[in-house]
Image (cartoon, rainbow, N blue to C red; front, top):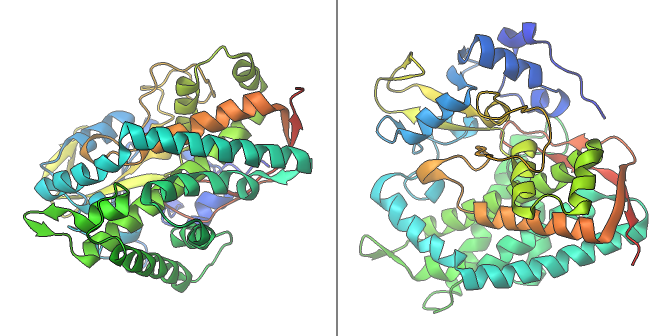
Length: 409
């Protein structure tokens, strides 16, 4: 289904904080116009929320990501928190913590991504993926989001956290409501309830991991010491929550977006099937193209400039990854889906000290899905209109009806 393209003449009237705008419209022309004509765009206030800077060029995004002196995540790292006074987990959760504490937390969490553990998770993921795709093929027609994509990242991140199998479907339901909705006008209480239940779940789980010598994420956090002190319950809950949300949502939307792109670009499906592109390169292009995270943000901590544009202390700066990943100054022929694209330094996982902790896991998931598709599926067809989630943070589909034809043995 082709979403209506928003006219670039409408830029000044658009509310980029509105989830409906992103779910129901194609904004590629808006991003192109902003990159070319208004790369340092001041978004006006909406209601009682302040205005903010909109940066759409790759070079400007990199300038912000590299400048740790004049920007912080501790005022929030997305519009939802930046526009409402900050993130309650600031200084506690890795994604919204800076300085030495960020480094110490990241070192603890990195230990969970050991080669041994990732090898084990990759093997488990591949078995799951093959089973899911085989079942989808046998159905004749399936909803790829619900039947396949939604079940893969959850298993991977729950494997890292050693979440019991019996709890995983429950957590999937919560993560899908925390930052997005399947319909317009979802009450904010629905999101907050989901977030609270995730936090409470991990508070209970962490109590069972105290004094454990296991190397899963929850055990590592429950028994680590930061600044000479054991991590408190609030810090433990918020970091488990952050890893669960980031690890589940990014992979899920990249996987479904990747299949749709392969259907829309049959030459790239053939390249995948014929093995003329490497899985690592192909997965990287899927991640650039699908843009699971629409934007990221920072609070400005000191007067500075971005691409020559003065920004002031206290301002809010947002980077629109939907635009930077299609910037022709950074990517040749950016509006073409090319599985052999090199180099491909996309910003899907951000950059620098705050690069997404789960980027290795997400790439692994996409690689294994691509390999399974080319092994088990001879062709794929979209059989009906897709439906997009309602969010100003995440980009992805809630439904993608497809028919998968089996590969001959």
